[in-house]
Length: 63
Length: 199
Image (cartoon, rainbow over all chains, first blue to last red; front, side, top):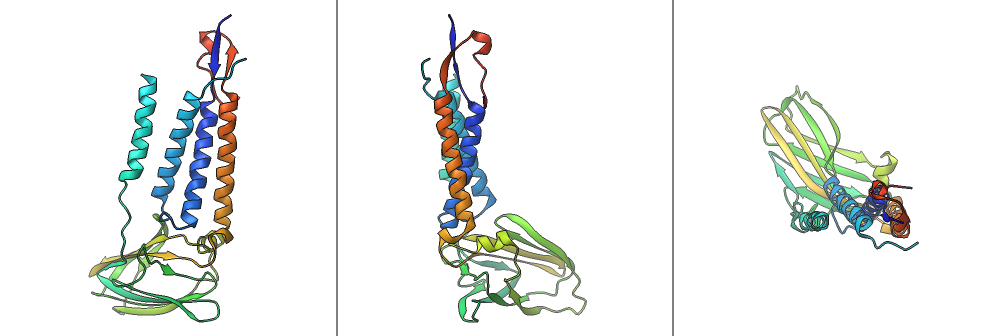
């Protein structure tokens, strides 16, 4: 019987987005980064990329 | 090929962060000048700044008490009439309006109470957030642009923004663990091989 790997890129997208937004807000509130929408967008974008890449490359669990 | 695209995208994102230039590190003013004094709720002087001049830099931002006031005074190099003004905070336009100045004034001063700020603005002034602020006036006769950095008072962990950020990060981590837990080998043919998503 043929099989395939089921992945969750959309879940990875939102996981990365929320993680990126959260990290950005914490860095802002501690004054590590200046509070600008540019940094917010960059960190969110990096989170999204990491989330999608992680979802696309995560090792599959066997049945 | 797909793996190479992913690696390139990841490398590009990291490079963009590392190469992103640091924001301006000094209070600046062009076509005008101003001085600012912040006071806490009890009326004690908290911080002072001048633009152009000392204070209100990224390394030494102008400290503001959300329950206090800011005394300000400013002058323009020329008489600016029949124009517009705008204020940008954190890179976002906050407020704008028109300038008449029929009297032809070049100086102005006042006291701004911060107690009436909306909730999110008050949250941003709790903790160590370094917030860039830019103000511009443009009209007949000249223009003025001033910029600097402000920060709040108190512990960063007392700000609701800290808890919002920590909560979002926690949700992201939980969803990330679900990504790994949900990546599994299932029966099916090539037609389902590209399926994915939240389910």
